[in-house]
Amino acid sequence: MMQVVDEVYPEFGGSVALVDVNVYDETNRNLLQRAQIRSIPTQIFFDQTGQGQVIVGAMTLDQFREQMQTLTGGE
Image (tube, rainbow, N blue to C red):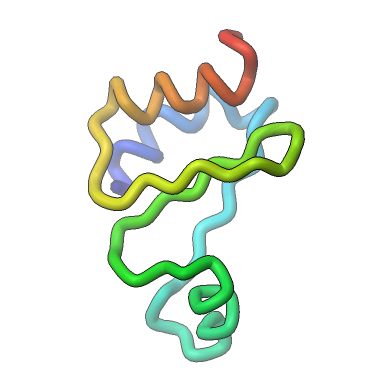
């Protein structure tokens, strides 16, 4: 997923915050449990209202770009 993110995210970096969580770091265990992350990769996209959409599994460039466009209102 990092290749996809690295390629697409710069287009949206001024409009969308990206948080990358190291699932192998024990200090993140509570966050992973709270977010119910059981598989990697897992992406959680939060809109302006705080509603989250969870996508489990790898996304293509087009899928990730579409999700970013949705978050930014089509920018």
